[in-house]
Picture: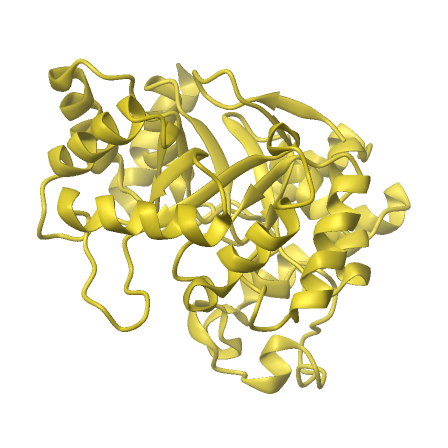
Length: 331
């Protein structure tokens, strides 16, 4: 599996990262172990979790699996910000100090390679997250800091805060990004690149929309996420079942057939080809699901097929932003 450097850090990470939100929820402990084993056997080293996943169970499962391995074999990333066990949560230094210690206990390690703010909280200035990182890095509990779901303005605010403290800047951004969700290309992703941050996409298959399991005017299949709950979250059938989405899926199906790859692999290959994108996080409920995506970093897809996907998936922009983007592309 291909690897690359994460931002300005010295972390050499797999271009396909393993997301573990399913662990302890949609994947049992035993299945989660099997998924982790399969990912490692495929050459992957970048495991992403969060304290809120399955209310801490995901971290506990990873910790049990890590107990039989060398700590240096895995680049371990976790996140804090949201409530675990129903307790109040925030990005305050006081809360994150405790959240980090709890994550380390569940993971059974003395440090994580990447600790990420899961989102801004709207109440505490990002200088508090910077202060937390300063102490966590000084103590050796965290090697590098990162963020997830931040606006461009928040990235700049945090960069200024780390500079004022004289500590290393955060090295990564974890945004939602896929053929269907490309909004971050306007401001967020370019800002991250200017700040030297690597970007690690979550939702690269748009919650299953890009895998080929859904078709226009056909009910979602039983056993799929939308088959079980058609109005589930941001990926709900009524929200994403648009003409734009069906056009993307039509071109994706053609690209997959032409390249002899699955639609999921082609969608991931397109994403990994985007400027500024370090890795894509794939999750799985079973080993078979993981096997369908884990080799995407080595897939070969013709440039003209990738270009066709870029063209059909261009996001609709408000008129003023569209004009500004055209001006940027001219220069």
